[in-house]
Image (cartoon, rainbow over all chains, first blue to last red):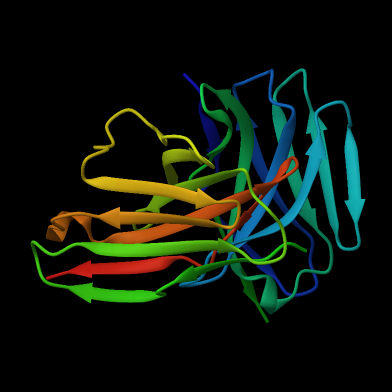
Length: 113
Length: 113
């Protein structure tokens, strides 16, 4: 079945780079996503990458996709305390009702000053 | 970006009562909306996919008679938790799809006493 795996915790110092890794199983996923969830809040779309791309950069965020290894990563440059949150990667999955998202369990990023 | 709202954000109810949660896409029309449930320190679990004008498609293990979903218009979907029990207490998040991207509501925290 489909499964998305992430490490559960990452701790960095302010100003350092953060790299959050994710592996997924469905090679037919068209898009892969990164969402951010702050405490008690819903999910905020950070960025996404189309499956035929290797890299996408958006300001401080860099997404790398290794389709062969089904590995996705999110790099946050110059990490700030406001980046502390849970980060979810998700793959798109075509089911009988359309396209749904399958999420990993989330990586809790803790940024210390 | 696209905005999705949910109402209410918090609800406390007695066991045995029914609770309705609304999900609205504010600045776009969504033919497909999704309902997720999030347990503490767990990923989001897809409950059902709702296409406007048709019956919702429920994921395995989700009781359709307990979690009633209505998607009457292109901007509104509702989830009704019928005869709620304490084990239904959770964080419910909806999302609406705009082209290839899902945008999430802020979530509704349900506490059943």
